[in-house]
Image (cartoon, rainbow, N blue to C red):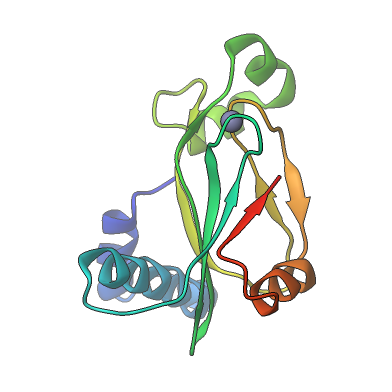
Length: 143
Ligand SMILES: [Zn+2]
């Protein structure tokens, strides 16, 4: 997977063709997240957390332009990782070519999010459930 910097550079050079709108959306998501982290932008935050391990599985920010989700980098035990992923997936989506998976920052569309940590594999959550959780007013949901 290309880094966001590489993605941004290609976008600014006019590449992407048919996929330019979704590439722009990905860049916008990263920019919005960075603005929040830097304190340049205020946002409510809902955190999904492992009930036993306390790992942060996802942070969700309801913004005017969409529901932003940040899934932090996570590590999977090597044996399980090998069983549950493909060589191509490991090559494209890990930081070490093996079992440390890249963070993801994106605006939720119609697709489910798959939340993961070293202890919780692929907890699928629908956009409707995330919206429901946001509307509950809670700041934290344990999984
Ligand atoms: Zn965990």
